[in-house]
Image (cartoon, rainbow, N blue to C red; front, top):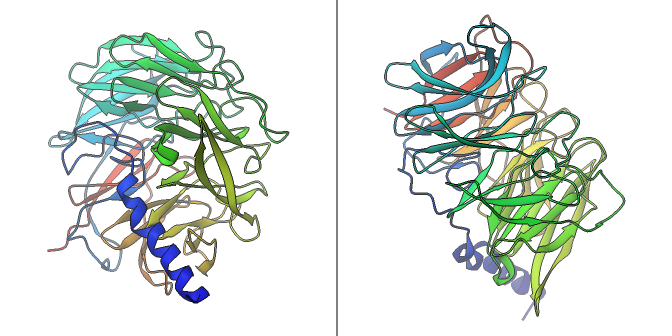
Length: 436
């Protein structure tokens, strides 16, 4: 058998065979729901079809807009016709700002309720609420973890990642979007004693906490700015997270620390959510770090993480906007404070193409119906064909300027029921991207 044939078979096994091992998130959602960070499977993949393959001049039709969300970088969860996000809003009575979870009726665009979470932050919250079984979970920048009734906005219970678990709050504060997996609610206080904890999602009872060993000299012993994903790699259901010390894997069953990978960490801010696929984990950070693919393997009662390749920062480093796996390829923005559209063959690390960016700053990335949506921090939105063979920029448009659109355009875009939702601080814009 020739080496070319062997390589083909290896790639075929990577792209097809391991798809049977994709994680299940155990949250019943409708096809049109977007219940948590990066969508139903935390992979920034929207399964909807029949969307526009090219936008008219000036962009898709703006259906409506609302303001009053407050400052913040939080993206939006959408379940059963309601939208949930977070913002720093004037307090009721005193006028002093407080951090809140807020809910809107999408049919009327009326705010249904607001639930106070904790103290405000300079530029607001980052967490995207997680909606599950009639409850909404959110983490404030100071580590306030709340469970809120989705119908009434009443706070059912609360914890604090610092005072209750000894968590280590990073310099730009907590940014994680909590994960629900079955009966467990997962989050990342950070530090050595409780790098990750699992709580009963209904009662807030502690199920387990994971202590973290020293995995290397890079980074600091504190939470990062990423969010947990689930994998069944190496025959073990585990939670993969990027902390400020690097990538880690934690046993879903009992919270046992399984493996760590320090090389991907930088000493400033470790942000993107890892991509898991079969036995593999891909991640990248900026500040001169780079990107890496790991293969997880089981030996007796342990799980090891083998580095398949490492991409230096001049080849690929992702700052804020994250990346998405489509088939055998990773698509995302390259560069510190940049978002140069890039396609990487996931299994080999080969850069298929990399182009100058159509917008300014970093870019939040979303995939739907054969296309990539790059939302740049200067509010340019680009539609790029998800084609590993060549770069094909299909359309761009710029968001209109509105009062209340302060700071950077970092909230990640969402597509739900043929509509593209984009937030900038106090303002939410809804576009029609359904093909007619």
